[in-house]
Amino acid sequence: MSWERNIRKTVPYTAGEQPGKAGIIKLNTNECPYPPAPGVEKLAGQIDWNALRLYPDPNTEILVRALAEYYRVSPGKIFVGVGSDDVLAMAFMTCFNSGSPILFPDVTYSFYDVWAELYGIPYKTCPLDEEWHICPEDYAQPNGGIIFPNPNAPTGLTESPETVEKIIRANRDVVVIVDEAYVDFGGESALPLIDKYDNLLVVQTFSKSRAMAGMRIGFCIGSERLIGYLNDVKFSFNSYTMSLPAQLLGAEAVKDDAYFKGVTGKIVATRERVKGELKELGFSFPDSRANFIFASHETIPAGKIFQALREADIYVRHWDKPRIGNYLRITVGRDEEMDRLLSFLKDYVGRCSQDGEDRDEGRGSLFWYEDSSGID
Ligand code: PMP
Image 1 (cartoon, protein in one colour):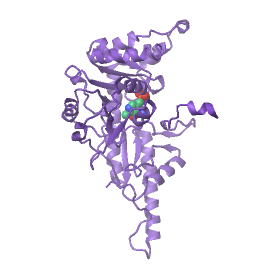
Image 2 (tube, rainbow, N blue to C red):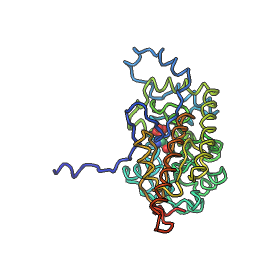
Image 3 (cartoon, helix red, strand yellow):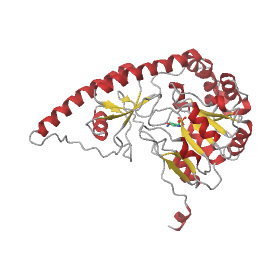
Image 4 (tube, rainbow, N blue to C red):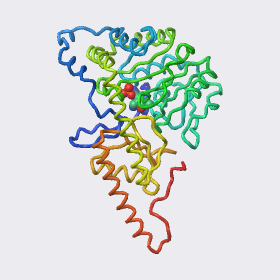
Protein backbone atom coordinates (compact mmCIF):
# COMPACT_ATOMS: atom_id res chain seq x y z
CA MET A 1 0.00 0.00 0.00
CA SER A 2 2.89 2.36 0.69
CA TRP A 3 3.50 3.25 -2.95
CA GLU A 4 -0.02 4.63 -3.16
CA ARG A 5 0.87 7.38 -0.74
CA ASN A 6 2.97 8.91 -3.51
CA ILE A 7 0.36 8.74 -6.21
CA ARG A 8 -1.25 11.94 -7.48
CA LYS A 9 -4.93 11.45 -6.73
CA THR A 10 -7.41 13.32 -8.85
CA VAL A 11 -11.13 13.37 -9.38
CA PRO A 12 -11.30 13.22 -13.19
CA TYR A 13 -13.55 15.20 -15.47
CA THR A 14 -16.68 13.24 -16.35
CA ALA A 15 -16.86 13.22 -20.11
CA GLY A 16 -20.25 12.91 -21.83
CA GLU A 17 -21.27 9.39 -22.73
CA GLN A 18 -20.21 8.02 -26.10
CA PRO A 19 -22.60 5.09 -26.49
CA GLY A 20 -21.60 2.73 -29.28
CA LYS A 21 -25.22 1.80 -29.97
CA ALA A 22 -26.53 2.22 -33.52
CA GLY A 23 -29.67 4.21 -34.18
CA ILE A 24 -29.54 6.48 -31.15
CA ILE A 25 -30.09 10.22 -31.34
CA LYS A 26 -26.96 11.68 -29.83
CA LEU A 27 -27.51 15.17 -28.50
CA ASN A 28 -25.27 14.96 -25.44
CA THR A 29 -21.77 16.22 -26.31
CA ASN A 30 -22.32 19.14 -28.68
CA GLU A 31 -20.83 17.48 -31.73
CA CYS A 32 -21.70 18.69 -35.20
CA PRO A 33 -24.44 16.63 -36.84
CA TYR A 34 -23.00 17.22 -40.32
CA PRO A 35 -19.81 15.74 -41.79
CA PRO A 36 -16.55 17.67 -42.11
CA ALA A 37 -15.92 19.68 -45.29
CA PRO A 38 -15.87 17.44 -48.41
CA GLY A 39 -12.20 18.29 -49.08
CA VAL A 40 -11.30 16.60 -45.78
CA GLU A 41 -12.65 13.24 -46.90
CA LYS A 42 -10.96 13.59 -50.27
CA LEU A 43 -7.60 14.42 -48.75
CA ALA A 44 -7.93 11.65 -46.15
CA GLY A 45 -7.94 9.15 -49.02
CA GLN A 46 -4.75 10.66 -50.43
CA ILE A 47 -2.55 10.75 -47.33
CA ASP A 48 0.74 8.99 -47.96
CA TRP A 49 0.58 6.24 -45.36
CA ASN A 50 4.31 5.69 -45.65
CA ALA A 51 4.72 9.16 -44.17
CA LEU A 52 3.28 7.81 -40.94
CA ARG A 53 6.63 6.10 -40.31
CA LEU A 54 8.00 9.49 -39.45
CA TYR A 55 7.23 11.80 -36.56
CA PRO A 56 4.92 14.65 -37.52
CA ASP A 57 6.14 18.25 -37.74
CA PRO A 58 6.37 19.35 -34.08
CA ASN A 59 5.74 22.95 -35.16
CA THR A 60 2.53 21.96 -36.97
CA GLU A 61 3.38 24.51 -39.63
CA ILE A 62 0.78 23.49 -42.21
CA LEU A 63 -2.06 23.88 -39.77
CA VAL A 64 -0.70 27.01 -38.13
CA ARG A 65 -0.28 28.67 -41.54
CA ALA A 66 -3.82 27.76 -42.62
CA LEU A 67 -5.20 29.24 -39.40
CA ALA A 68 -2.96 32.32 -39.64
CA GLU A 69 -4.27 33.00 -43.13
CA TYR A 70 -7.88 32.45 -42.14
CA TYR A 71 -7.78 34.62 -39.02
CA ARG A 72 -5.36 37.15 -40.57
CA VAL A 73 -2.77 36.98 -37.82
CA SER A 74 0.91 36.10 -37.94
CA PRO A 75 1.74 32.38 -37.45
CA GLY A 76 3.69 33.31 -34.30
CA LYS A 77 0.40 34.19 -32.62
CA ILE A 78 -1.07 30.70 -32.98
CA PHE A 79 -0.67 27.58 -30.86
CA VAL A 80 -2.40 24.30 -31.76
CA GLY A 81 -3.17 21.23 -29.72
CA VAL A 82 -5.03 17.93 -29.53
CA GLY A 83 -8.46 19.45 -29.11
CA SER A 84 -8.99 22.65 -27.16
CA ASP A 85 -8.89 20.55 -23.97
CA ASP A 86 -5.20 20.01 -24.69
CA VAL A 87 -4.68 23.70 -25.45
CA LEU A 88 -6.49 24.67 -22.25
CA ALA A 89 -4.55 22.15 -20.15
CA MET A 90 -1.30 23.59 -21.53
CA ALA A 91 -2.53 27.12 -20.91
CA PHE A 92 -3.42 26.35 -17.29
CA MET A 93 0.03 24.87 -16.76
CA THR A 94 1.78 27.78 -18.48
CA CYS A 95 -0.20 30.78 -17.30
CA PHE A 96 -1.61 30.16 -13.84
CA ASN A 97 1.39 29.99 -11.53
CA SER A 98 1.00 32.95 -9.23
CA GLY A 99 -0.29 31.17 -6.14
CA SER A 100 -3.32 33.51 -6.11
CA PRO A 101 -6.69 32.00 -6.98
CA ILE A 102 -7.75 32.01 -10.60
CA LEU A 103 -11.34 33.05 -11.25
CA PHE A 104 -14.07 31.49 -13.35
CA PRO A 105 -17.90 31.38 -13.25
CA ASP A 106 -19.70 29.01 -10.85
CA VAL A 107 -21.70 27.59 -13.75
CA THR A 108 -19.29 26.83 -16.56
CA TYR A 109 -17.25 24.17 -18.35
CA SER A 110 -16.59 21.60 -15.65
CA PHE A 111 -13.05 20.85 -16.76
CA TYR A 112 -11.67 24.12 -15.32
CA ASP A 113 -11.76 23.03 -11.68
CA VAL A 114 -10.39 19.62 -12.67
CA TRP A 115 -7.28 21.18 -14.26
CA ALA A 116 -6.92 23.57 -11.34
CA GLU A 117 -6.99 20.62 -8.90
CA LEU A 118 -4.61 18.60 -11.05
CA TYR A 119 -2.01 21.36 -11.18
CA GLY A 120 -2.59 22.56 -7.63
CA ILE A 121 -3.81 25.97 -8.81
CA PRO A 122 -6.01 27.72 -6.24
CA TYR A 123 -9.33 28.88 -7.70
CA LYS A 124 -12.44 30.79 -6.81
CA THR A 125 -15.74 30.71 -8.64
CA CYS A 126 -17.80 33.85 -9.31
CA PRO A 127 -21.57 33.31 -9.37
CA LEU A 128 -23.40 34.10 -12.57
CA ASP A 129 -26.30 36.48 -11.98
CA GLU A 130 -29.97 35.46 -11.96
CA GLU A 131 -30.08 35.71 -15.74
CA TRP A 132 -26.97 33.50 -16.05
CA HIS A 133 -24.70 36.40 -17.01
CA ILE A 134 -21.18 37.09 -15.79
CA CYS A 135 -20.88 40.02 -13.37
CA PRO A 136 -17.73 41.80 -14.60
CA GLU A 137 -17.20 43.46 -11.19
CA ASP A 138 -16.50 40.01 -9.70
CA TYR A 139 -13.41 39.84 -11.87
CA ALA A 140 -11.94 43.05 -10.50
CA GLN A 141 -10.74 41.37 -7.29
CA PRO A 142 -7.09 40.27 -6.91
CA ASN A 143 -6.53 37.00 -8.75
CA GLY A 144 -3.98 34.74 -10.43
CA GLY A 145 -5.71 34.62 -13.81
CA ILE A 146 -9.14 34.39 -15.40
CA ILE A 147 -10.91 31.95 -17.66
CA PHE A 148 -14.47 31.88 -18.98
CA PRO A 149 -16.18 30.52 -22.06
CA ASN A 150 -17.95 32.91 -24.39
CA PRO A 151 -20.60 31.74 -25.21
CA ASN A 152 -20.68 30.13 -21.81
CA ALA A 153 -21.34 26.43 -21.39
CA PRO A 154 -23.76 24.99 -20.50
CA THR A 155 -25.93 28.13 -20.64
CA GLY A 156 -25.15 29.10 -24.25
CA LEU A 157 -25.25 32.79 -23.33
CA THR A 158 -22.78 35.29 -24.77
CA GLU A 159 -21.20 38.23 -23.04
CA SER A 160 -20.83 41.42 -25.04
CA PRO A 161 -17.42 42.50 -26.38
CA GLU A 162 -17.65 45.42 -23.93
CA THR A 163 -17.99 43.09 -20.95
CA VAL A 164 -15.11 40.94 -22.17
CA GLU A 165 -12.88 43.96 -22.68
CA LYS A 166 -13.84 45.37 -19.29
CA ILE A 167 -12.63 42.15 -17.65
CA ILE A 168 -9.37 42.13 -19.60
CA ARG A 169 -8.74 45.83 -18.94
CA ALA A 170 -9.11 45.28 -15.20
CA ASN A 171 -6.63 42.38 -15.29
CA ARG A 172 -3.56 43.48 -17.19
CA ASP A 173 -1.17 41.72 -14.80
CA VAL A 174 -2.56 38.20 -15.27
CA VAL A 175 -3.52 36.06 -18.25
CA VAL A 176 -7.17 36.16 -19.31
CA ILE A 177 -8.35 33.16 -21.32
CA VAL A 178 -11.55 33.38 -23.33
CA ASP A 179 -12.71 29.89 -24.30
CA GLU A 180 -14.57 30.31 -27.59
CA ALA A 181 -15.45 26.67 -28.26
CA TYR A 182 -18.94 27.77 -29.38
CA VAL A 183 -18.30 31.20 -30.85
CA ASP A 184 -19.07 30.23 -34.45
CA PHE A 185 -22.77 29.78 -33.74
CA GLY A 186 -23.49 33.45 -33.15
CA GLY A 187 -21.03 34.75 -30.57
CA GLU A 188 -18.67 37.67 -31.00
CA SER A 189 -15.02 36.72 -30.85
CA ALA A 190 -12.47 38.50 -28.69
CA LEU A 191 -9.89 38.04 -31.47
CA PRO A 192 -9.92 41.75 -32.43
CA LEU A 193 -8.54 42.45 -28.92
CA ILE A 194 -5.45 40.29 -29.34
CA ASP A 195 -3.25 43.12 -30.57
CA LYS A 196 -4.43 45.46 -27.85
CA TYR A 197 -3.89 43.09 -24.89
CA ASP A 198 -0.81 40.87 -24.84
CA ASN A 199 -2.20 38.97 -21.82
CA LEU A 200 -5.28 37.72 -23.71
CA LEU A 201 -5.57 34.16 -25.02
CA VAL A 202 -8.50 33.21 -27.25
CA VAL A 203 -9.09 29.46 -27.49
CA GLN A 204 -11.14 27.77 -30.22
CA THR A 205 -11.79 24.24 -31.49
CA PHE A 206 -12.50 22.19 -34.62
CA SER A 207 -14.77 19.90 -32.59
CA LYS A 208 -18.04 21.80 -32.98
CA SER A 209 -18.39 24.17 -35.93
CA ARG A 210 -15.81 22.35 -38.08
CA ALA A 211 -17.30 18.91 -37.40
CA MET A 212 -14.00 17.28 -36.46
CA ALA A 213 -14.34 16.25 -32.80
CA GLY A 214 -12.92 12.84 -33.69
CA MET A 215 -9.75 14.33 -35.14
CA ARG A 216 -8.94 16.30 -31.95
CA ILE A 217 -7.85 19.76 -33.08
CA GLY A 218 -7.89 22.91 -30.99
CA PHE A 219 -5.95 26.14 -31.14
CA CYS A 220 -5.45 29.45 -29.46
CA ILE A 221 -4.45 32.90 -30.59
CA GLY A 222 -2.58 35.43 -28.51
CA SER A 223 0.46 37.68 -28.44
CA GLU A 224 3.70 36.18 -29.76
CA ARG A 225 5.21 36.34 -26.26
CA LEU A 226 2.37 34.42 -24.71
CA ILE A 227 2.34 31.83 -27.52
CA GLY A 228 6.11 31.50 -27.13
CA TYR A 229 5.67 30.56 -23.46
CA LEU A 230 2.99 28.03 -24.37
CA ASN A 231 5.29 26.43 -26.93
CA ASP A 232 8.09 26.20 -24.38
CA VAL A 233 5.82 24.26 -22.04
CA LYS A 234 4.50 22.06 -24.84
CA PHE A 235 8.04 21.21 -25.94
CA SER A 236 8.87 20.36 -22.33
CA PHE A 237 5.92 18.00 -22.17
CA ASN A 238 5.39 16.25 -25.52
CA SER A 239 6.76 17.69 -28.76
CA TYR A 240 4.74 15.60 -31.20
CA THR A 241 1.25 16.10 -29.90
CA MET A 242 -0.55 16.43 -33.22
CA SER A 243 -0.66 13.54 -35.63
CA LEU A 244 0.15 14.09 -39.29
CA PRO A 245 -3.44 13.36 -40.42
CA ALA A 246 -4.78 15.87 -37.90
CA GLN A 247 -2.42 18.56 -39.17
CA LEU A 248 -3.20 17.92 -42.84
CA LEU A 249 -6.93 17.44 -42.50
CA GLY A 250 -7.29 20.37 -40.14
CA ALA A 251 -5.57 22.67 -42.62
CA GLU A 252 -7.84 21.36 -45.38
CA ALA A 253 -10.99 22.01 -43.33
CA VAL A 254 -10.07 25.67 -42.84
CA LYS A 255 -9.91 26.25 -46.61
CA ASP A 256 -13.60 25.64 -47.21
CA ASP A 257 -15.23 28.69 -45.71
CA ALA A 258 -18.45 28.35 -47.71
CA TYR A 259 -19.06 24.87 -46.28
CA PHE A 260 -18.21 26.08 -42.77
CA LYS A 261 -20.66 28.98 -43.01
CA GLY A 262 -23.31 26.69 -44.51
CA VAL A 263 -23.05 24.21 -41.64
CA THR A 264 -23.04 26.80 -38.86
CA GLY A 265 -25.92 28.64 -40.57
CA LYS A 266 -28.01 25.46 -40.70
CA ILE A 267 -27.36 24.71 -37.03
CA VAL A 268 -28.31 28.24 -36.02
CA ALA A 269 -31.55 28.02 -38.04
CA THR A 270 -32.45 24.67 -36.44
CA ARG A 271 -31.63 26.04 -32.98
CA GLU A 272 -33.95 29.00 -33.41
CA ARG A 273 -36.80 26.81 -34.67
CA VAL A 274 -36.36 24.34 -31.81
CA LYS A 275 -36.35 27.17 -29.26
CA GLY A 276 -39.84 28.17 -30.40
CA GLU A 277 -41.16 24.61 -30.21
CA LEU A 278 -39.62 23.90 -26.81
CA LYS A 279 -41.24 27.04 -25.47
CA GLU A 280 -44.64 25.78 -26.63
CA LEU A 281 -44.04 22.59 -24.67
CA GLY A 282 -43.42 24.50 -21.43
CA PHE A 283 -39.64 24.71 -21.50
CA SER A 284 -37.67 27.83 -20.71
CA PHE A 285 -34.00 28.50 -21.39
CA PRO A 286 -31.39 31.20 -21.70
CA ASP A 287 -31.21 32.59 -25.24
CA SER A 288 -28.42 30.33 -26.50
CA ARG A 289 -25.97 31.46 -29.15
CA ALA A 290 -24.24 28.07 -29.12
CA ASN A 291 -25.04 24.70 -30.72
CA PHE A 292 -27.05 23.59 -27.71
CA ILE A 293 -30.04 24.70 -25.65
CA PHE A 294 -30.03 24.65 -21.85
CA ALA A 295 -33.65 23.95 -21.04
CA SER A 296 -35.77 23.49 -17.98
CA HIS A 297 -39.41 22.40 -17.92
CA GLU A 298 -42.01 24.30 -15.93
CA THR A 299 -43.32 21.21 -14.13
CA ILE A 300 -41.35 18.07 -14.99
CA PRO A 301 -37.96 17.60 -13.33
CA ALA A 302 -34.99 17.46 -15.69
CA GLY A 303 -33.74 14.19 -14.22
CA LYS A 304 -37.00 12.46 -15.12
CA ILE A 305 -37.04 13.80 -18.65
CA PHE A 306 -33.39 12.81 -19.04
CA GLN A 307 -34.15 9.21 -18.06
CA ALA A 308 -37.24 9.02 -20.24
CA LEU A 309 -35.29 10.34 -23.23
CA ARG A 310 -32.50 7.87 -22.59
CA GLU A 311 -34.92 4.98 -22.54
CA ALA A 312 -36.15 6.20 -25.92
CA ASP A 313 -32.52 6.22 -27.17
CA ILE A 314 -32.31 10.00 -27.20
CA TYR A 315 -29.21 11.13 -25.32
CA VAL A 316 -28.94 14.64 -23.85
CA ARG A 317 -26.83 15.90 -20.94
CA HIS A 318 -27.92 16.39 -17.35
CA TRP A 319 -25.84 17.35 -14.31
CA ASP A 320 -26.99 16.66 -10.80
CA LYS A 321 -25.33 19.83 -9.53
CA PRO A 322 -26.34 22.98 -7.64
CA ARG A 323 -28.17 25.59 -9.73
CA ILE A 324 -28.28 23.47 -12.90
CA GLY A 325 -29.87 20.23 -11.64
CA ASN A 326 -33.20 21.06 -13.22
CA TYR A 327 -31.81 21.75 -16.68
CA LEU A 328 -31.02 19.60 -19.69
CA ARG A 329 -28.37 20.55 -22.19
CA ILE A 330 -29.61 19.56 -25.58
CA THR A 331 -27.23 19.65 -28.53
CA VAL A 332 -28.73 21.02 -31.74
CA GLY A 333 -28.70 18.14 -34.21
CA ARG A 334 -30.15 17.75 -37.68
CA ASP A 335 -33.72 18.88 -38.25
CA GLU A 336 -35.01 15.32 -38.41
CA GLU A 337 -33.27 14.42 -35.14
CA MET A 338 -34.73 17.46 -33.44
CA ASP A 339 -38.16 16.55 -34.80
CA ARG A 340 -37.90 13.13 -33.15
CA LEU A 341 -36.84 14.75 -29.90
CA LEU A 342 -39.72 17.22 -30.07
CA SER A 343 -42.31 14.63 -30.91
CA PHE A 344 -41.13 12.45 -28.01
CA LEU A 345 -41.26 15.44 -25.66
CA LYS A 346 -44.69 16.47 -26.85
CA ASP A 347 -46.04 13.03 -26.10
CA TYR A 348 -44.12 12.76 -22.79
CA VAL A 349 -45.13 16.17 -21.49
CA GLY A 350 -48.75 15.37 -22.40
CA ARG A 351 -48.60 12.06 -20.53
CA CYS A 352 -46.98 13.66 -17.46
CA SER A 353 -49.57 16.43 -17.31
CA GLN A 354 -52.29 13.80 -17.49
CA ASP A 355 -50.61 11.85 -14.66
CA GLY A 356 -50.25 15.04 -12.66
CA GLU A 357 -53.93 15.85 -13.04
CA ASP A 358 -54.93 12.32 -12.05
CA ARG A 359 -52.76 12.47 -8.93
CA ASP A 360 -53.87 15.96 -8.09
CA GLU A 361 -57.43 14.85 -7.56
CA GLY A 362 -58.27 15.65 -3.96
CA ARG A 363 -54.80 17.05 -3.32
CA GLY A 364 -55.19 20.64 -4.44
CA SER A 365 -52.84 21.87 -7.10
CA LEU A 366 -49.66 20.21 -5.90
CA PHE A 367 -47.96 18.58 -8.86
CA TRP A 368 -45.71 15.61 -8.09
CA TYR A 369 -42.61 17.62 -8.86
CA GLU A 370 -41.14 20.05 -6.38
CA ASP A 371 -38.38 22.26 -7.66
CA SER A 372 -35.10 21.95 -5.81
CA SER A 373 -32.84 23.72 -8.28
CA GLY A 374 -32.99 27.06 -6.49
CA ILE A 375 -32.67 28.95 -9.73
CA ASP A 376 -35.84 30.72 -10.67
N1 PMP B 1 -14.37 24.35 -23.97
C1 PMP B 1 -15.67 24.16 -23.78
C2 PMP B 1 -16.47 25.27 -23.18
C3 PMP B 1 -16.27 22.95 -24.14
O1 PMP B 1 -17.58 22.76 -23.92
C4 PMP B 1 -15.50 21.94 -24.73
C5 PMP B 1 -16.14 20.65 -25.16
N2 PMP B 1 -16.31 19.70 -24.19
C6 PMP B 1 -14.12 22.17 -24.88
C7 PMP B 1 -13.60 23.39 -24.50
C8 PMP B 1 -13.20 21.12 -25.39
O2 PMP B 1 -13.46 20.72 -26.69
P1 PMP B 1 -12.37 20.00 -27.57
O3 PMP B 1 -11.30 19.43 -26.67
O4 PMP B 1 -13.11 18.93 -28.28
O5 PMP B 1 -11.81 21.03 -28.50
